[in-house]
Length: 230
Image 1 (cartoon, rainbow, N blue to C red):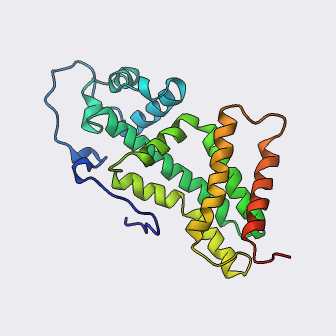
Image 2 (image 1 turned 180 degrees about the horizontal axis):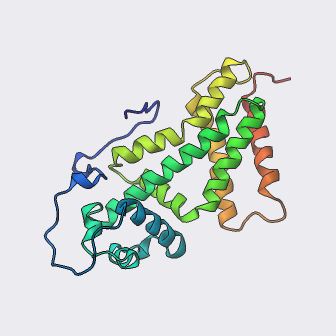
């Protein structure tokens, strides 16, 4: 499904395009194996196992061979879906952005809270996701910086980071937020939250909870973006 890329600019290296589906690659020539191939939904099983390994041991220790051993399938089976480790890493990144988009959508679409409360909930959700899945979060941003980003990752990234700009646009329409590109305005809050996540992961925040800090950051950013300067 086509997604609106808004103001995000991407340069894609055509030589790095590939599709995550099982039909995108012809079967590989492999040595016969006595291990079973069928494992229900093997791509999803591989992604779940890879995410657990990623959080436990880091991206450098990810191994398709080890994952196939863990799942009880032949060493060649994962190659039908993820021909290389990089394909698996890219699929993990796309999955991470999709998951982030889902939880951010829930946080921003509630209509029962006032504007600042909804933005604060979205900020809490973003920070909470990053701290709950630190290795996956780092992998997602590494994929974001890598030249030749796969279109599937790009689309998932754009969706994940569209929710706060959309919320700021609602604030503009309600006369609460100054005019301007909502995506550009959202960078202020995004940078603050990203810094908060990094400092928290590095153990540099002590003596104060994120439940206190996040609302304060949102409040200060909204003061700067507010149409009411009195």
